Image (cartoon, rainbow, N blue to C red; front, side):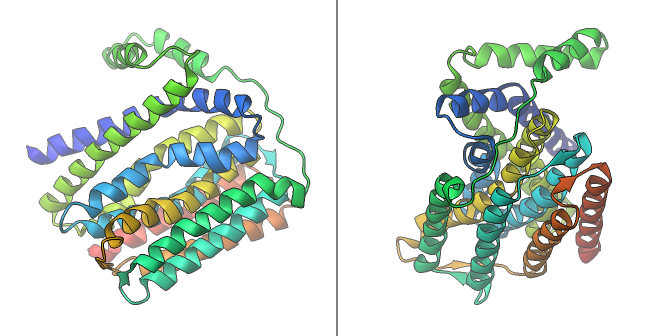
Length: 353
């Protein structure tokens, strides 16, 4: 009975994360980016990446402060990073063929590679100390500066957004769905519309969206811990698979929406930028808060080291693929990337069988 309740809580959290992202987060993000005069890849690498990576950050915090589940936080970050590179870029490619400006991709790949190298170095001795956590935060600060100044270093054109009425289309489909499930989902949407601020208060919508994502992330962790205990599955495996995919739903939905609008560069910047945020802030900030008091954090590297190496391999593979295709992505490429992720999932599952 408890297993069924945990599974229902997990599925409900996944669904609500997708709805919050689809109906509120992307909308507020566009409004804020327009207000701050940010180009699409800059918004994707910063606001979009930070906001949609909130689940991973909160999962990492919650897991670190739950005794015995520290590995779940690190596993979620690493697994989510692999999901972002393979599934998000793959799904964006399947939604719409696009040409990607190479300049911001090179920027993100450079900092992503540095993040992975720092992660490998920190995990090498099986523990995290204060100086290492500071290095994570400092590198992210340098990345933000690079994002703001990159267009001056390597000039390039911004993606041109084509308006697509995503929200209205979704609402029309829901209205046509008169089934019991459709009515139930419509009821959830009405409740969310009542809870969230009006559209003109987009900053508040953005804040409430992230707060909602944080709360849903807590439910995700609690239900995932419950499932792992009942099924006797190692916490790190739950983090690498179930939580990694679940917490990346906001990234996936956000990227698919902007990809449909013709902003493929923003989608890829979000995927890689989210990974940079996940590693440097999602791990670095909780580690800093704990180690600043002189405490050393042990790291369970079982099942993690091979995944970290795979992280590096996937980003190099995606970069090589984009260069070979002259910075174009299409449906076939998307199928290939998602297939690799499915293989990675199966490999992880077989590790515990």
